[in-house]
Image (cartoon, rainbow, N blue to C red; front, side, top):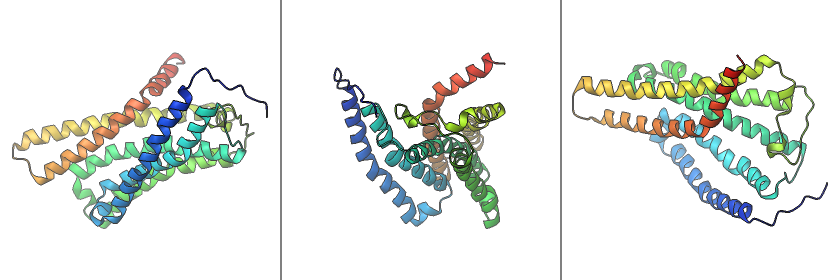
Length: 259
């Protein structure tokens, strides 16, 4: 391995690494507490709106203990260490699953809130809960892991990894897939879900406000629960949209320029 020059002119990488490390150490017990609270508490475990939250917590916990340490190490050293093909494949797989899996789960969350708040009769029986809750949740939870597992581990392509690139460089399958898949990946797996998250979330707020005005009655326990649903959804949606807006806008601009 060729020796790499060490940049001693700035101490910012070490400071950045220390800040991330402190945040990671403090975050781990918080994630563990939240996950176990939902799993151990019977009422929380049986609440349908907590199921997708639990999966999102699990995704983010994987990012915290697997993806983030490798990214921090790369940021501090300037290269991937330890460097191996197996580690590179695992790093790319975890990043792919968390990135796109979180988008699809938030997309389903923005739809499911309409069902739980305004159409609760859809999940009143076991059969309806299976049809309108468990099956969609299973699909949106497994779609990204299955797709990424095939593309990263099974798709026949020449794997090329570099130790000077974050996540060992670009995905190996990217240059060998058909051009239509790039369009499918950008629109179906990214642009469309983000746009629909915003649309369904805003529609939820509008429907709730209209319903309150139409009923014109004192706040009940159910309305308090609905307020809690909407507040949770808004916070998740705003954080996600802010994090993805820059890339989202760049992709839209790219397709507009190539039409």
